[in-house]
View 1 (cartoon, helix red, strand yellow):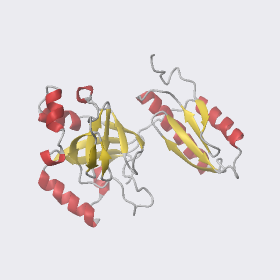
View 2: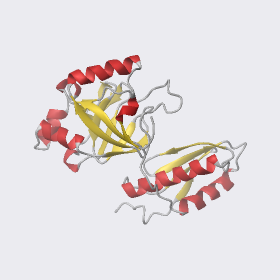
View 3: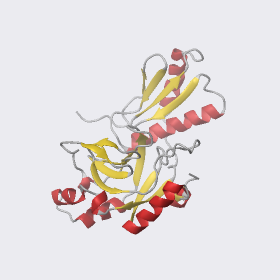
View 4: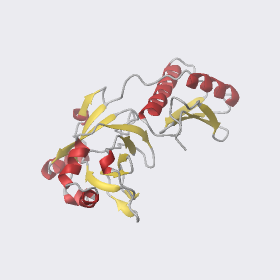
Length: 256
């Protein structure tokens, strides 16, 4: 069966319990569907800023959908579903990306235990894999799995690899990993089965930043910038003491 694209899929509203509605824009992960997701989320932002979303608590963009959470004591579910359906069918697409980040990554062997194996499986040299990783502009599709965990689209097809047959019981925090057509960065230490290719010294989630605790957001673009181990350790120490300014990693699109 051929996956339905954003151009052929009719948006639909799916109830999620009695206090949430999921608005689906497609069934495939692709830039066109993602643009619809971001455009819809942006339209909700505008409505909220104009006081037009009474009873709505929050909305969460995903790969192909946006889930809208509401307080059933303050908002009528059927009426809200109708309003969301009308808005979704307008087909607004995101007109601009979010921030573009140049995030440092160290590819030392200690931080990249799967780099050599992936390279060999793809008939590449490790330095070829690093070149592909650092010359690609990745797009943040969504956050999930862990607080601040970004799912990044745009991984070159040459690096497409399945998950590990046996997941690791512990993936170090800030590891850069790939599987299938996706790239990700672990903000926290956790179990995981993705292929580890490097590590960033930059904190990806800061609970003390109440305005924007997650460094990355859906719609942001990421370019991995290779650094040496000594530079990694310097940034890691500055991040730990709170003196590292993440705004220096921004190429465009606002402030961190």
